[in-house]
Length: 572
Image (cartoon, rainbow, N blue to C red; front, side, top):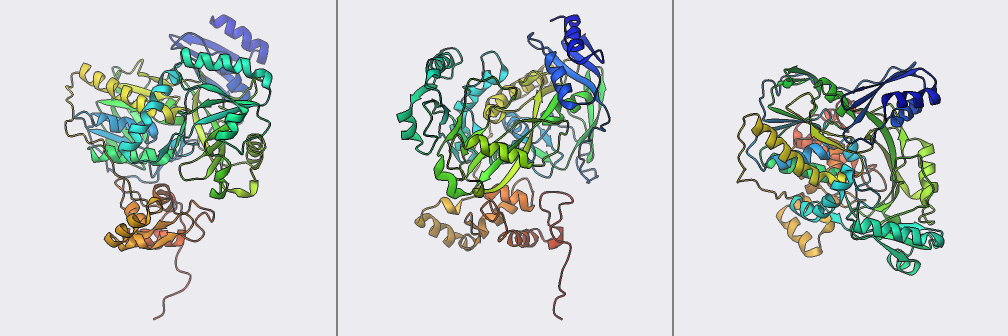
């Protein structure tokens, strides 16, 4: 569509306060509005069907000071003067999986993330479904990667020692008259989109697979290749395997500026020193467009989208053993996949998410309205769901661009840059495939810049995780305890986590020792009591193993103090 036509559309909808212009393959919308949802709508109206054309949002939100990125409090020279072959900005699933793939070549790779651990933002705040790709249309980058990525998960999780289950996905329909339409849809998914496991099953088949779903379902769309994984445990495993193969990680490290000369990034300034990379990979999630701006290569915008998930007590796990949801054929204004119920690898049910547009990239607050709406919607999937079984909830912020697709390409004006942006659902599913392609792209770019790259013949894809006492049979448990008596001392009763597992987690390859980092690695505090019993013991173990005072042990990162000091003086 011509710029003139876009301008007319916006004028008709919002008056004459907005301006549209086009620069090469970028459509820039500017002006001022007093409602964020209107800004998102206006930019979405300008999305082009022309491949590779992106919308940049330069509309000012009146009366609002846009929140700045939270910065680490650390300021030192820990990485000052480093000259990595590749600098990856972002320690989520994208950055960590790419780092691991890059180590198949003889390269120096540095990953920086502003948080105190990897997978703190979107990669640790999603439902963990490995999508089959049934809801994506042919032609998008998402669709091209999702089937390939899905099929890689058995191997990846086996190599990285991460629990993964192919539990299947059911989407129930109430109206039997819709079955011919859904049958045609399933045929199209199988024969055109490559999602060849898609089929329609009867009510009887559905009951055989999931007996507690809504008895009013007339039939269901079924994809047996759908699976579930812990997104943060997989990201951690990717990072640890990358480190074992020579990659370096610098946490609490934020990129704050770049020096760009003659279309090339010369240096990247951080709060921990200045580095001089040959190539930069932008995997910064919701901040990818900010990084693009630093690199003078901003041709897209991220509009954050919040999503809340609820976690149920494990006793509710028997209600759903797979991934389940319901659908009708009414058009939805939401870009969410609709949310659902997921039986996680740990045995809990996870319910959600919803989708709420926001201008705040780091607002993880959970609202009662979201919790109520999610429960009301998913009780239509499984009527026996009970809100009293909710043990906790969390909110993540997705990095959507206005085209609702991935951006995986070299810089357009900056030559030693690769963008891995707009990575929202199904970004977890596609990560293994995207990592392969981006690492190949990086090697190709480095070689074109005159940097020969050799294969790393000593690359080891195997990462051994921390033994899980709960998953062992009595003979295995006894052998483990005989070898390490700390594995015979249970610290977390809800999740049956031993002292030995916690100590092993404290000494993880990333060097992260906070209560939440241990929780995400071996699950103390993930049960019904949410750490009410075990958290003080975990704090004590961290203090002992790292030889720091208990009041210096953090919950999640800088400033998240748990203890302020002694309440009683020791007896003399």
